[in-house]
Length: 340
Image 1 (tube, rainbow, N blue to C red):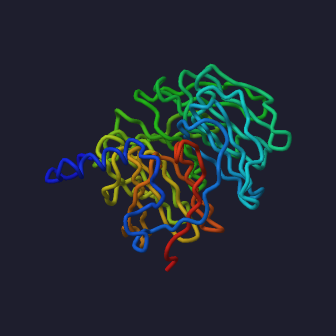
Image 2 (image 1 turned 120 degrees about the vertical axis):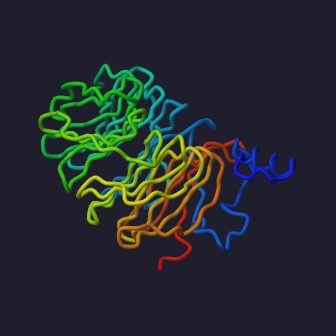
Image 3 (image 1 turned 45 degrees about the vertical axis):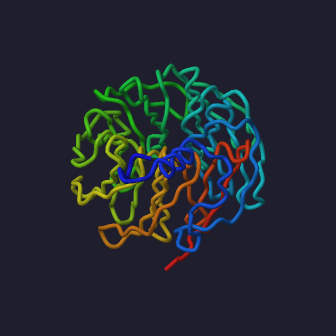
């Protein structure tokens, strides 16, 4: 809404209404033919028309787990049948969620009670809650030591949970707010974005010790992270300056930065198409295609509250839980307009 100073008052108001949640928007672009994604289906979601947060796709079982944050619920969605399997209660202010098929577990940040919930994938019952963690947010799993790492955003730390005992092992100070936490199979390290330090921190999951601090110049308040493991690239979004950095994981250097929507939040990477999705709090979604070690902008579009995204790299379907479309939450399923 503050992107162009020369806009008329009427147009500026229209953009403001769209960003704040104009619930009648039905198309992702004023010109759908030029949009980088096209709509496949809108599936109604249960619960009230309030904010969603992270998602985690278990492609092996065809299930998408969605944190319905302000409803205190975890939604379990069958991606093959395109229907809700369950809507689980008991997850106060749930932020992060991460499915670990090899353990048959789903981990969810019950931020409202400063704990991480452990859910059995088969029974969908909560079998443990671990903490305390001041403000649990993003979640990652390191398979070697079987440990879960949790962004403690307001605690300026990363919490470490033993997945075999569901106990809190330690808390790693970061000296800044913890953005997203991810596991890099290539290095075997956990990577955490640290807001005030404008850096990525690398953690050895076996020792739970920091093994590197890596600045991300050009990025202010890094938060969202996605990886292209095979190409050894990390994509890091800055909340404060609406930029995306491409980081070479072989030397941890920033190679380039690109503009994205205002206040970028969740990122998702399609390993099959080499396509990156950057969702922002403004509702703007920016799409890039990887070209060697650089990115090429495919396009962008806006939808109300489209700040969280996930993608299935096998089907190339992209998932956007939208909190309020005509008074109800729904899951918008989309696919690339072009795959070449």
